[in-house]
Length: 374
Ligand SMILES: [Zn+2]
Image 1 (cartoon, rainbow, N blue to C red):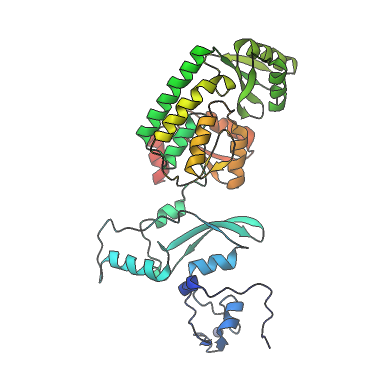
Image 2: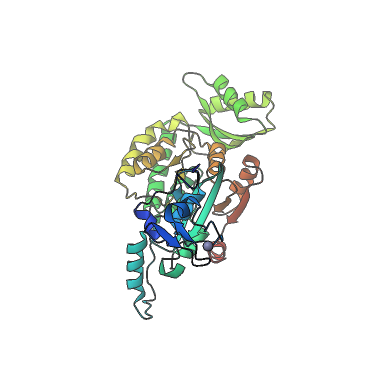
């Protein structure tokens, strides 16, 4: 006869259960009240003594397993503590690290993970005490401060996003962006195009106006969907003019012609695609530390091949910035958006896309430093 009716599947004793300090064996004696408790009952009671409520020590992974509804995604699973100070007490710290990594199966004393608790999104940081007594290794701070959940960059900013994510080296990104510029310039020289900003008209209306204004040899498209009421259109000059007029008829507050050398993010950039694909394929492009949300699809990208494909697609596809920001807000509800680079244009747009979003704009090296050290 079971003493407890288990409504949830008990925590399985796998290799990870080693981290638990609940002793192995059939039963255990509570250190507080001396009650003898069967291990399976202790497990069913979430490692709390059923008589006196003494909490047995459990491991970080076990804590996550008890808290989350199902699975979880660990943040920065690859971050490993190092020993930059070459610290020695009674033993070299390096040795202690090695032993702890071996015995706990963890890389540091802190596990940070995203999952759901009773259906609600949650991020949990659990300290593993058996990892050198919860010693604050060099990566604990980084784990608590958190790496970004995701990144995104507007148009060529998508390259900056991959630099931030560690997939691209800054110098390689600069070379790619230069090549991209040359190819776009060339495409613009071959077929002259232009762009215009449409203010105060919903995107759907702008798209309809573009469709209306497009003919077989002269097209206009919504190219940068920057805010729900701010869209940049792009295409052949006559079509852009027609589309701008159609937008005004549909109630646009303003249509502003932009001084550009080509119809960016439109089908007119097609001649640039093959060359950019070639340059991207040859570039050193590594694994990203966090997913980058692609302009072209507004979906998080986590594979190299997909990243390269979408960076090339971006030339002829619209910058779906509104959807990108909504996706970011969905991935990390309540997270802070950090705008890196001069000005606060993106923070301004964001406020119109995700109401109540918290933003930080870092425009100078000093501001970046203060933010990182703050
Ligand atoms: Zn007890």
